[in-house]
Image (cartoon, rainbow, N blue to C red):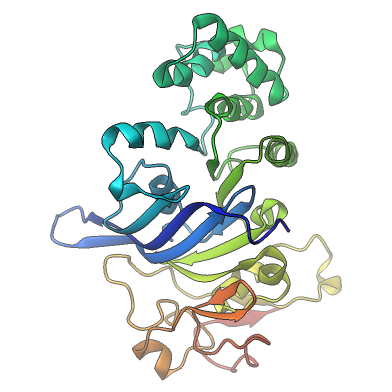
Length: 340
C-alpha cells in the first residue's frame, strides 16, 4: 500500500447531495453526510449497489454536481472560497472517465479532434502543440498514432475507453474519477484496462477514485475501499482489511456474493443472501439504514444510528455490533439467510 501519510488531493467533510423528487414534494438523499480524503497517488475504491450514491459522490468530486452541504477541499483549497475564475482553472486537475465509452465520444468527431477538444477549452497551446500532445497521449494508452484519424464507430469498446483515458492526460490531472469504467467491457479486456490505470498512476502520480459495483474489480486496483449503502459510507479501510476481515454486515454480504470458480463440493464459503431491495433514499430507515436487511440487526439498530468508529488503524465502520475482531456469531434469525 502507498504511503498513508501522503497529503490529500481531495478532502470531503459531511458531504450531502439531495435532489427534489419527481413530484417536487420530497427530497432524494442521494449522499447523506460522508467524509473522507483521497491521498496523492492512491486509488480510492468506492463500491455499493445501484442507488447507493457512489456515482453521485464521483460527480460531485469533479464539479459536475454541486453539494447541498458539506466541505470539499481541492488540494487544500476550499471550493466555497474560490472565485469562478479560480475554480475553472482548478477543476482541470479533477477529471472523470465515464462508464459508456460510446456515449462519451462525439460520433461526428475524429479521435484526434476528441483528444484536442479539452486542450482547446483549457487554452494556452498552439495547434501544433495540441496535435503532438494528443498523439503522444494516444501512444501512452497503447494505441497507434494512425488511429487518430478514425471515428468512434471504427474502434472497439476497449479502444474507445483507452481514448477516453487519453483525453484526460494532457490536462495533467491530480485526481481522475473512474465511474464503472470497465463495466461495459468484455471480461478479457478489463484486466488490460486496469493494468493501464496502474501504469499511468506509476508514471504520472495520479490519484483515482475508482467507482464500481463489482468488489473484485475494486479490490484488484484499490489501496483503500469505501463501502456505500443508501447514501452513506458503512465501512472504509485498507483493501486487505476490507477483503480479508470485513467489519460490516453489508460488506460481508457483498463479498459472499462473489462467485467462486470451483465445483460446489469444493467451495468453503457460505453465502449471505440479503432479502428485499435497497430502501428508498427519499425516506431511509431510522437508526442504522441497513437494519431492515441485516441478519445481525437488533432493536438498538432500528432506533439508534451507529457511530462512525475507527476500530483498526485507518479502518472505520458504522455498526453497533462490530469489534476490532469482527462481528459476533451470526444469530439464527433475521433478514439475511445463509446458503451453501
